[in-house]
Length: 183
Image (cartoon, rainbow, N blue to C red; front, side, top):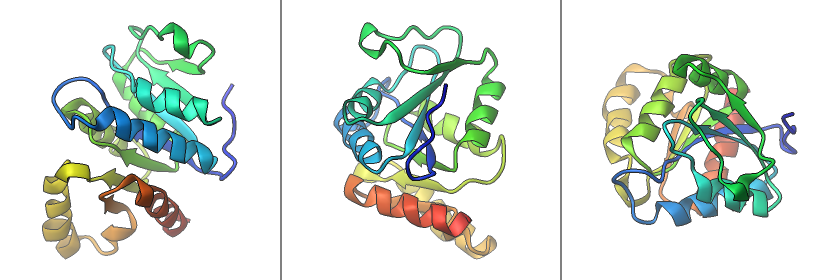
């Protein structure tokens, strides 16, 4: 059973510790998980093809946070995550639609192409939700450039739905701001 968040925010977090990417991503996941837990947000994490953001989940739960996993049928949770609420949906489209409808904001952490692909698939699967991307070590610089060059010129108010930050400390400020703008 899902636990409601203390803040009213349910955040779908897209993060991966598989494949090429930022060598600091595990520590960034831990920082983000602890910070969102302290702020009282409910976190939703996607688990597909054996990829599960364990550092984020572990840090969030250790800090007393509420974390739920939306997973494919192949996922096997490590023993350290016993008791973690998990929703198994066999079809990817179902998982992405579930996240799109359950979350009030999406957060992308530096990870792999799989996590950013899941973010955009989720964004396209349901109602418009704001997105905040942690652009640490320029992980999302191409997307930031696209937002500045293309979205700014063609989509009025795009900045109310797409934000970037370079550090974990500012991540909550951006999430809170875009959530307020979306109301």
